[in-house]
Each structure stands twice: as structure tokens, then as C-alpha cells.
Length: 555
Image (cartoon, rainbow, N blue to C red; front, top):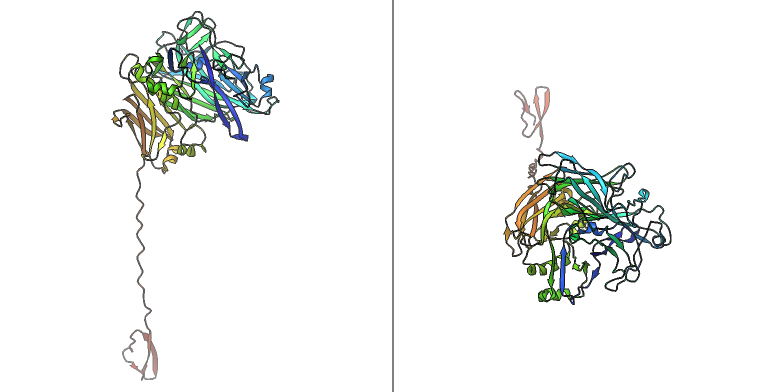
């Protein structure tokens, strides 16, 4: 199976330089309706095996100029260009690698006991695209595609204690054309991390290999052949989460009610501090270290997520789907399957038209543990409140097949944070699927969005079906330690909207009594009289003066 890559453009705000990073996804091509069948692949974890470590020289005009792998940062192809894309599966931290690495992998049983993982081996051990770490330039090591960690005392459904773990980091570095990297710093703006219980299977498997613009394109575009491929010959190769030389790792069931977690040490802070993922009831922290780096720690329960991996005869497609695929729109493609991903408009539009054709049923339903950064909020209210903030801002997770890209949008009319979901109504076992939703949002961000004071916030969760009816869901809401945490579960699909309403009791202003008016007082009139007694004479003053006894008023 060959999987290409879509360019994901990112802007470096510092110095006003535009930088492109390349991530594993498929190249955008038009659907070919001349083929007898059409395929759709919306599934998790495929990007881990599709993303090979790489340094890529990015030309100014990618429509006419090719993208090529560099053997090192000083490769002439990378020296010639202004922008270099960087993709790395982070290694385990050790005595020599102290940043841009995974420092801890662990599990927590239902009683709260913590089990620490031990790194075992890298998969694959090496490749022609490997590159060395350059800590002074924040360039991580590029070697392997994750590895196996053993968590002693934690046995998964496959009967052992081995877990595939990766933290896929991507970004890039900008410099002057025709010059080597000197003091420039790489900006790593995306991370996608996962933990998968696995069993090793031996056979005719081979590691993923990279292909650049020198590979032939299927659609005639300059970079249509850019990406990665695999030459494994076993019939179950698509089930592998990662490939080694002569073996692959097959996913297994997570142990029941165990939380899993990891800590990642980054050389510099990520540009994005919104996260989303395939986890349930997460706890997450993002902190800074003493060297301007960042430490991301998260633990959560795994969650059952559906996938769609189906082929349908072109002649059986609905008129609406044919019209949609016949448009000038280009779609991500991998191995002959449309791959719109699990977020964004394409994913919603394509899945909505596809689900009726597969009887609203998932192909598989299995456990996942994965989180990743979000690519922008898409909401001016959220942007306004998050652009000036540092550290972790929020985490949104769900088990829906397709969900809104970015944090929940703020609906000004209803004053709710709205989150759209789309998923098959039935599991792969033909049972009614139930949904989960979690939102962790920093209290100060929520207060900014709503214009609230520092007084306590109340919140409610409402799940509204596509026909506008309210659904019954179990919810948990609390605010503590500077975070508002909301969780909903047990609702049904296919296309609900989760609405989070936050309110704050309005405190009536204190009634200040008006000052009492002071009555005006007229100054009394003072009169004086002269009183005599023999030769004695006195003057008496007052409003109505009188002479004392024995005195008489002088005439």
C-alpha cells in the first residue's frame, strides 16, 4: 500500500516567514469514477506507519517544483532551499537525548496503582532517511517510527505486556536560501501520540519506505509521488500498526478499566496548545521547563472508536455521491481509498453520503488511545481568548468516526459551545453504538469567551440529534484547580451536536441608601436689651430677652 502526503501549510508569525510542514496524509487528487469500485478509509493509527522520519527540502513553488528528501540538514538540497520540513518519531529520553523525547510511559489500574513502562526496542531500527538530533537548533532525532515499551504487571488482551508507543512530531525550520542552518530554531507545531497494545507477528513484512518527487506520480502532478509505501507481502499487512524487518506489530485489546499515560519533553513549546484525541476522561498538564522547553503529560482511558474501510461498486453509488465525487474537489488518497481523515468538511460531507450505502454500520470497532494537536480554532471568540495565552488551553475528545476540527465553536445565539459529530449508528457487531465526549477547558479561557467574572461557573451538556431532539446522556461536570471538566457518554449516533452551556449566577448589586437630606436651619435673630437696678446696668441678649428679677428694662 502506498500512502502519499498532503502539504500542511503553517505560518511562522515570528519574522513573518511562511513555513510548510509535511505530515502523513494523502496527496490531494480527483476521484477516478472510471474505476469499477470506489473505496473509503477513515481509521485511526494509519499515520504512524505512514510517516517515515524525514528532512524535506520545500521549494518556493510546490506546483511546479518538487519536494525532495535530504540525507542531513547540510544536504545540498536542503542548503539550497529556504524552508525545510521535519518529521520525527521521538526517541525515548536517555543520558544523551534529554529533550524532544518520551520520558515516561505508564498505566494506572482501577485502584490507582501506577505501573511504569520500560523502553525495549525501536521499530524499525534504522533507515536511509535517518538524521541526527541538533538540540541547539531544536531539531529532534529522526530514527525509527516509534518503539515497543514493556509495562510490567499490565497484561493486555494479547496475553503479554508489550505496547507500541510513539510521539510523532512535525514542523520545520526557515533560513536563507543557499545557506546552511546556523543559529536558526526549528518550530515544531504538531504532535500525534499513541499507545497500542500489540503482539509481534513474524512473516514477509518490511519497513515503510519514503518516496519523494523523484517517484512517478499517478496523477501527473509534480509531487503526486511524494510520500511513503510498503512492500510487505502478508495478507494481513493492513492490520499492522507498524512494520519491522521480517515482522509487524498487530493491535490487541486494552486491559479493562486501565488508564494509560505518557510524558513528552520538547525542546521548545508547541505553537498549538489545543488538543484532541481518541481517549476518554483525560487528565493533562502542559508545563514549561527551565530551558524554555515544554513537558506534556497526559493519562486517560482508552475508548472504542469505529472505522470505515469499505469498497463499493461505482455503479452502486448514489446520484448525490457521484455528483460530489465528480466535482472539481480533490481528495486525499491512499492505496486506492479516499482518505478524508476524521475531521474537517471533507470528512463530514463524504461520510454523510457514504454511510447509507454501508447500512450505517462500522467496519471495525476497537479500542484506541491517541491524542494530537488541533490546527486552529476556527472561532473568532476562541481566537480572541487564546491568542494571548500560554500553556495548555483545552482538550476535546470523542469516539465519533468524524468530528469537528478545532475546539467547539461558540454559538452566539444560544450562547453554547457546539461540537458536531458524525458516526455509524451501528457497531461492526451490529449493535447500537454509543458516544463519548469530553471537554477540558481552562477556566480563564471560558470566562473570557463568555465575559464572566471570577465567580463560580455552572455548566450543562445537551446532546441534540440531527432532527433536533434532545438525547439522554450521562454527564459529569465540575470546576476545580483552574479547569472546567465536562464529560458526556451513552448517547447514540448518527449525527448529533453536543452543546455545552455555561452560566454564572448574576449577583444583584448592593443597594446603597441615598443620604438623608439635612434640613436647612435659619440663623436665629438675636436681640439685646439693657436692664438696670439702682446704679447697676446689664445687657441681656437672646431671641426674646428678659430682665432678671429685681432689674427693669431701661427705657
